[in-house]
Image (cartoon, rainbow, N blue to C red; front, side, top):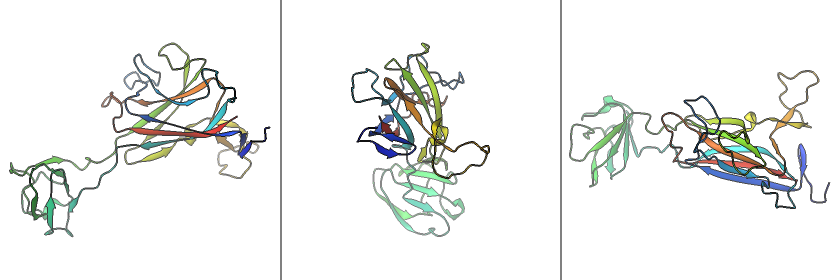
Length: 259
């Protein structure tokens, strides 16, 4: 144990580890093939490099015990105005790009396509009663219509891979292993991957939820031990509806410690 050791339960580390990656088009896996295996032409992003080139004399390996996913650019943007019983009759001012959410179509005296989001596309400022505007019907001012799921966040799954003795996962070569995957559900802005990671070998020295454990089974933390020379990669699992990646961006943050 060196003089620089920090008590980071359940292990002692010499230096903190903090790495991150922004995923946009770095997809990995195949929904059609029902597999997380890296496919030809795919290149997941490097998340943690535990000296794969074996050139750092101060790196003896480490542990990753926290990984978090966060949406980078896809957020639930609230509309500028909402039409319901409490706002009916309000005077509003719209510029191009402003959104009106018609929550209660019965409050309208003009035309619309029903409840949903109406984005104003006119080039001039539009002023009027929110319940009396013409939201459809070929008006000069113009609105585009989308249903109530316009601002809902799509499901995104991140897949994690481990390599040893190589600098990237090569499809079909067997030089990597799929470790785990975590999904951001619709409406979630971030999620912690702890429950999907493997259990660490060192027991946790404090009390915790032990439901489901045997009488002599210790409570354990979760994380990933990385030997010197290992790497951890991450990619976006593609859906059939979005095989080009995740242009809005998915931020992946890994924390742990170095030995």
